[in-house]
Structures are given as structure tokens and as C-alpha cells.
Image 1 (spheres, rainbow, N blue to C red):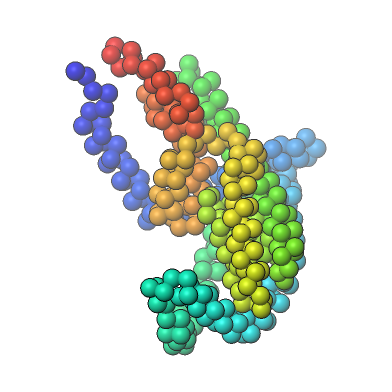
Image 2: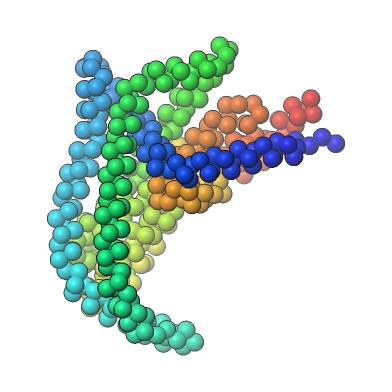
Length: 363
């Protein structure tokens, strides 16, 4: 009896996987900005190509491509900063109201579930005792996080510029590493990767815009202050797969619990975001993103957990495009094509497709 997978190959795969994982973790400060730059460069390529029709200087067209995407984002961020300042000014009073809201929620839970016996006063007292010793560390951590973000953002912009500037050289370098009879397949692989990344980023961006509009309208109807701010913030968090929409609903819920005197508004926010999450997961994202990321949910969740464990939030954001690129690469090589099929979202519809490799294995 012949086995498709032997112990030697398994050991080799495990060794390579562990080695790459270890390198990825210790080198995350280098790898993450470069990966974000690769995705951004791929997304900006069509814009740069458009400007190249009218301007022959690559450096100018790349800068124009940056401006086309980044300036609108900076404009929105500037407009939102004023609302953030207003929210920050009201934080002291919000804190007191939040404590009252938490106490009321605790009493309601204790009434509904008597055996829970939640001591809210004790929890709030321990929280207040930790504030003095934690405030300085929080401020220091905030400065470190801000500095790290700025450094990584700067590196990403620099990497993106040079990836676009030298794109033809990088492409030719990759193609000419293979035998002449395989070069057309490599070109097709690179094209598929480019189209997948471009479509995924564009699709996710459109989903974020749609969710921002829907969230803003819903929060306005419920009567929450700053509905556009909370709505757009929740829409932007949709970039985090599966949990982004729920996290986006948690923030206005806490704010409503802190600032409103009614019970129905926080409850309405929870109900509204549960509905929105179902609509987004079952209608909006499948229709817009569709098969642009051809990964079944099992491998999607595994990739989110693995990359999130290695790289935190950055890894969660990168998980789906990276696993999708991996599937495309594996699908273009004969011996790894079954693995790509196993990762595909159509695996449940074509479970017998693996039979076509059976004869190759027997031969």
C-alpha cells in the first residue's frame, strides 16, 4: 500500500513551518510594514498605470497615486478629530454615568439570574484603586504605541514607493527564476495575485463605506450623539474579519450606556448591530467580495488565529489576503494543487475532485 504523505515529508513541512513562524515573529517589525506595502502597492498599481498615460515620470505618478488614496483618508480623519476632541472633553462626566449604567446593568443581571451574585460595587472599587498606578503606564504605553505606528506607517509608505518604482524589475526577476516553459504559468500566477489583492481591497473598502452609511443612519434613528462618528468608526473596523462589526457596535453601546438616561437605546444598539452583522456576513460581503477570496471558512478562521497570534491586529487584517495569495500560488504547482483545492470555498460542492490526482499518485 502506498501512502500519499510519508513521515519524511511531514517532518520537513513541520520543520519549515516552525522555522518560518519563528522568523515571522521575531522579525515582525520588518515583515509587517513590507506586507502592508505589498498590498498597498498592488492596490495602487492601476491608479499609477492611469497616471502613466499622461505623465512619463514614474516618481511623479507614484506620488499622485498616494495622494489620490491618502488625501481623502486624511480629510476624513481631520474632520473626525474635532468630534473626538468633543468626546474627550466629556469623558469625566461620561465616566460617572458609565459607573451608574454598569451598576444598573449588574442589578438587572442579578434580578434575572439570582445565582450570578455579581458584586458591582466591589468591581468598580477595585477599578478605581488601580487607576493611579495604571495611569502613568497607560500614558507611556500610548506614547510607545504612537511612535511605533508612525515608524511602521513611514516604512510602509517608503516600501510601497519603491515596490511601485521597481515593479517591472521585481516582476522580471521572479519570472526568469523559472524555466522558459514555465514562465507563462508564473506570469498568470502573478496576474491572479494582483487581481485578487486589488479586488479584495476594493471590495472591503466598498463594504466599509456601505456599513458606515447604514450604521450612521441607524444610530441617528436611535438618537445617539455623534452618530456619523460612531457609524464610520464601526464601518472601518469591518476590516477586521468576523469580529470587526461586533467590536464596532460595542463602542456606541458603551457610549450610550454612559450618556443616556434610558434603557432602550443601549438595547436598541445591540439589536441593531446584531442585525447589521447578519446582513453584512450573509448578504453584503458575499455579494461584493464574493469569490475574490476563494477560501473556505475553516482555513479563513485558522489563518486569522495563526496570523493574529503572531502579529496581533496587523496579522488579523492581513490574514485573508495572505491565505488567499498562498492558495493561488499552491494552485499553480502540480504537487500542491490538492492543498489549494482543500483550502478553496468550493470544496464542499466538489468533494470528489481529489480523485483526479489518484492516478498520478499511483503512477
